[in-house]
Length: 199
Image 1 (cartoon, rainbow, N blue to C red):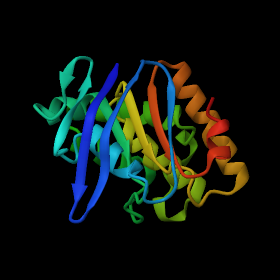
Image 2: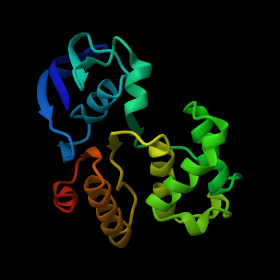
Image 3: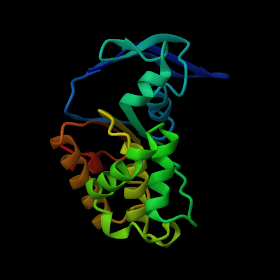
Image 4: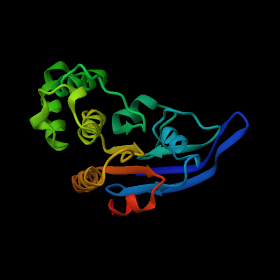
């Protein structure tokens, strides 16, 4: 379970979060909806222990994530709205790099790489360079990198941005599959109709 309590965060001259509180039960897709500039990205970054709030707490399974961010990062995957890929690397190499950066043992890296590729529907693209993939497949690769360590929770900031309608529908189906596999997803968007597909 994720519990956010009385979260306050300020940038110079701007209060982005003002006493935000909610709970997310496991195995659900939760949408964060609001216009650009509403604080969705800041909230996700605080929930992923990438920003430290001025006040308030975030707990995952009863543990304060800001007391032990590394333990938090083992439990969750995070994909920002501006994700980067190594275009000259193959899909397999990108995933192996992600696995290594997560501290996965060398003896396990190939297994988790292939599992993540299968899970995200890109197992047939492992030999392709990331730079040759379509926008929708690049998004899938980025998500595969975020879940290569098999986290319980996946947080995604505006994941459908820039995708065509067919790719958005495919992404929605993917999220429902991940949820059905037991993952908890937190997804932000400024487009309400886009989030209807995730429920």
